[in-house]
Image (cartoon, rainbow, N blue to C red; front, side, top):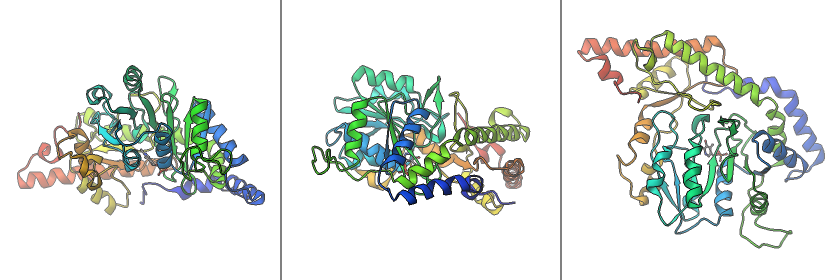
Length: 398
Ligand SMILES: *Cc1c(COP(=O)(O)O)cnc(C)c1O
């Protein structure tokens, strides 16, 4: 059996007619840059995110960059964020000449440990970028409390979390800005690059619209320096057509996560479930986790990944090198051990297939294969005189 990490064709086959009709409409209009299709998409995403404004942009990366630019963040400024994220979060900060300042992650949710933010505040701090990793929101109560106390701007990196909720509030609607990505592997993917910024602040929305068009308003009058950060009408039309299916896809992802939890527990593989007790399963601590990824923890991660690949199961490591250890950020001067939980997560986590169209048989096959790997490990351990706990790590989960 084959179980790819993601099967975009399976989804496309269910919405082909709608997407083709949306594309045909844009082609007939020959209106490709901004315009009514982008506005329609912006309005729908604003509503979906419980925000009053949305600004379509060229990618999630550019969304982050434009928000920082809108706040005039640059050299001499510090921005607090997590080292355990996709590169774009931190790259946006450093591209503008500002300094990323890291707080380590909470090992249970993999999101930044908000209780550590205050200890990183200096006279140079300007903003906080919490990332809602894998589709579950960071602790926004604490992030906002620190930000309000000091007057910091909060930019939510919600690239993996469209529709996620905490205490009834949607990802992107709590901070001053929320950034979404329509990269094809995100829960709401375009047919290429695209992104959106949501905000409840009309002035900020206005400035972002100016920034995404080279800072011009009106045309050829440049008050500020922006860039070409526009969302294409074709991409907007696709995103808009797909949005009406998003809740159904999210429910399927959540259902798949529940089934994994159940099958791992039944196989005696979950840490909390006793038995072999080796696999750290994702923990849902906010009420709406949208499962962009279903990420498990196991100490022999690389061996498991290779084993699953042989079985036809696609997996991915998000992310193998935390940002503070990236070559391009060596100038920040952080060594190995600086952010221990992020480094441990980078060694132990593995994302399993979780996309909506997976069948129960596929989910069972993945769990069975993980179980076979653990058994093989235990057998070879008893031959070589080792113990199970040496192989799988007694603290493979906090
Ligand atoms: C995908 C992603 C981005 C960047 O989005 P792009 O649209 O690919 O530029 C930023 N942050 C996180 C956490 C992401 O997962």
